Length: 304
Image 1: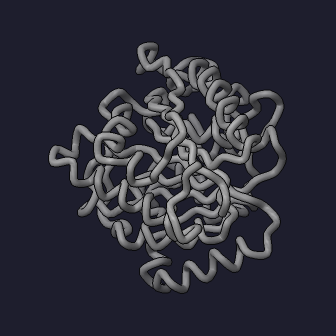
Image 2: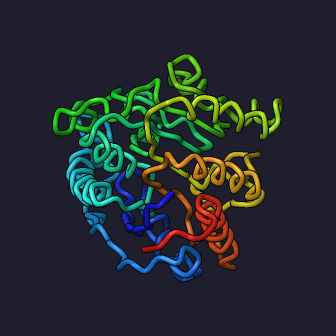
């Protein structure tokens, strides 16, 4: 991969709640992120309207902060689109998972792309199914065209990614999905490798299956890395905790293999809450995980 890294900060909590994920990027930078990635380009920060956050679902969409999220997604998409246009590899640090909308909107403005989605949760609720109204519950549903047009059809580009072009890795919230009546992503055209299948079939075999999907495809992909895919034992610094999960070493192995395909055009990193990482050790492990993936993709760290 010959692309150079562009760090982008998008510390939005509009799709979640203001409990600490807005500090994700600052925490990783303090933990040595810039040095770990050897990024020499000036950091781009996308200002957020976090001060407009509301806990009230709006009547039209049944989502929290939907109108501000739409506006923010357009601003973020414009910034990411420009980086894609000039051949950079944007790594976007949230914030919550709703930043996926701006990232995928940016790609769709350039054509058809795929999505590799690492997350403990399916993120496939409709607003009527979501127990919270938080768009971080629904970002994958919205990106694939399910939900209110206000968010699913920005600039007439619905869907931002087709279901058949999504690979979901690491889901472990099946019991919650069933409890709240969300659609099972395994019954869609997505390719799904949940935690149970990883444990049953072993990670190397799962990775071989993922490569068998990606290698013959002409599509390049966005990589979404929600840090709650890491096990609760190793990364409890998230707002919605679930038992089990991937180890940091397993996540690093997955990221390395994905980056080595040469098909990743951008990355989003979300949900880590540094207020729950009092020692700062988790932030350092996230930085190391990302750095290892960048090294593996080219034999050396990516920088301009």
